[in-house]
Length: 156
Image: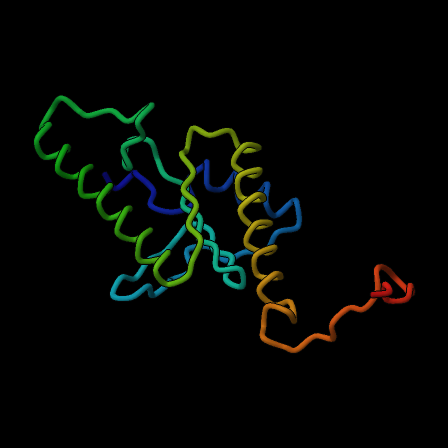
């Protein structure tokens, strides 16, 4: 079991490399305290509060590729169930703390994973920008007058 890497797996490194080539900057394995749970996602965009996990099919129970060993099957089924419960708990804690969570299976092609990360980052960034607009912060705005730019107000 010692030979199984916890961090810097091949799918994770490929995703990080592709994101870096596109100009994205992130933290790796950054500790996040989410309520009573401490979590270390594989890739973290701290400013946007996005946590990304690259999950191995065996260890996290992929519905497509997850297998159950025949030898010592009771131990392994309990172990893999605990992993899935921990994943769900940590994702719920992160979401409750205001984080966006993205889980990517190791079998997902790198370019597809990059698109998924990009989509989430863009959505979070748009949401953040919309929340920071003056009309959404309670700042009084001047009412617009007239039918269009520079045109007089319609006669009543």
